[in-house]
Length: 210
Image (cartoon, helix red, strand yellow):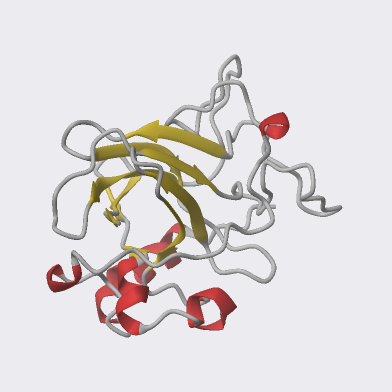
């Protein structure tokens, strides 16, 4: 049974996201540093990952079906505090599947089956303009957490940032212990507002400021 919300509910959430506690990222907050957060218990070790740990988490190599859930194109840039793009930055993301299960041998559940068609973990590098992209699914909640995507970024100089990306305006945010620890500006800097494209998929922009 999927943990994702019905499409009609999602459209209501994202249509009202800009008015929900002002969490949508304003232009004036574009260079607010992306807040660091914990790695969490389900960062997938190499032994648990698929061999094709690329930017597309929805399609696993050698499998016919694509992942369940709502497809979302996540893209943006990596910027320094001065606004300069950061090229060749390594970005990793990982998240639970549409059933609320992580690609991690330690995530076991008798009621939530793992989606074998969801890659669960992806990696890419920014181009010369600091841009990146991932094809994944709209994050869903699981027991104890609001929907989120984990991200780890490593600059060419070796410095790194680990954070979590939230859905602006999601009704479970205020009950999430990690989201509540963030200040107002940090919440905006850690949130995305997905919109639905003409083809039915979602898309969202997220800039890492490091």
